[in-house]
Image (cartoon, rainbow, N blue to C red; front, side, top):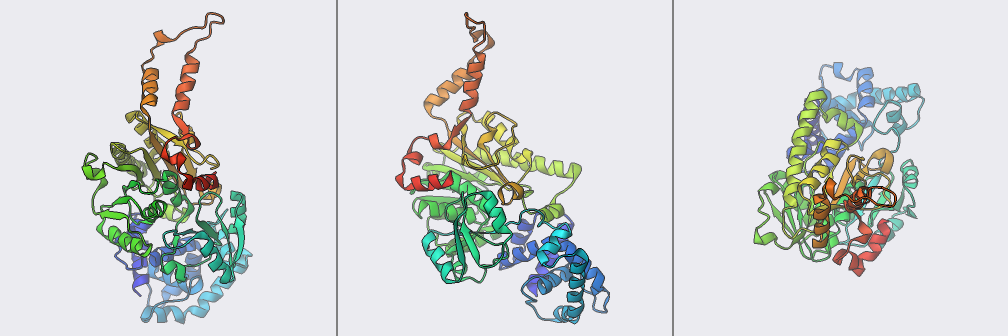
Length: 493
């Protein structure tokens, strides 16, 4: 019963706008955070259906009146989940209404002229309108290989469709059900299953061979792409999926310094990393902003991942409606968040040996994304953006020169949660010299072509715009020359 009571308490906090779903889940102290998070996500997704069924069945009018939010999670599991997983008087109350609840569900389907639960959610304006988010599963190469996992699922009766060739193919696949899967077209070691596929009891998941991770969440570590043996910082690390992905890219060699200020989240992360077979991590219960970039301990750090707290506005629609503030209140929160995000990103760029820094959010707001990147580029001229993953269909908003280097993700466009990613690269000494020369150029320095009278300023400005953003394919140094990475780079594009 603790699962349902905790979930009901979080629903109440969401209605009072006391935080985002993930934050409230991790702060709850509940042991199985994944189970709790999954229950909440699905209850929220079916919210409009559940509300109507509770009303029409008069569930809350009995002598043993259920608290409304407790009723919601219990009704979800009874009608749409795996059945009630509890005992006690509340289970008896729900079971006493079971026939009526099922009857009202059937009536609602007839009324809406649908036959499936998924279509019912869609018909009532639920978050499944349009493309449906598939189940993404990252293969943990610290414990297994893509070939072995594909073989495993084939033996379990799954049909393998090979590697996807387009996002549209993934969208079409997301409408299917059953024992099917394919390989993602952008992220190596990522498999895609129908949305209803459940892995929580699968032996590969429980043993850490598989990581349940949204595709967009895989992008920051993938694009940072530290070489084997590198020293890396994960600035805001919990719950740890990105940290485990970084460790897999490093092949457990080198070091991943992972920071998080929340003790409970860090403890949960430690358990996740242990199960994933990560051994190159060094966890610290610290605010990243208090870490001294000049500390000799971090003098080898060449790659940094900054995924700071954000509004979470890229999460599924129903949860965003329940957790987002409106009007002035929202604007004030976005200002506070973006101020923190600027501090975190600026701090990362101060580490003297840092060559590459990824900045990412699960937000759709320009204030947390392009505006932050634009300001940081102005404050740190030693860095520029890298044009990452050229085949990705959605780029940054056109708010500053070079914004097309950034990536945006959304359910409608990329079949992922809403996300934003930017990759910074430290300029070489020669690039710094050229940048300084261009910046110092004054109007009096502009030369005029005597033959046609046209100013050469346009050529200088055009050259400067191009220097703001460099293709990932043209990055020199170890990132390009590593032979072991060539195949992965080819797969990305």
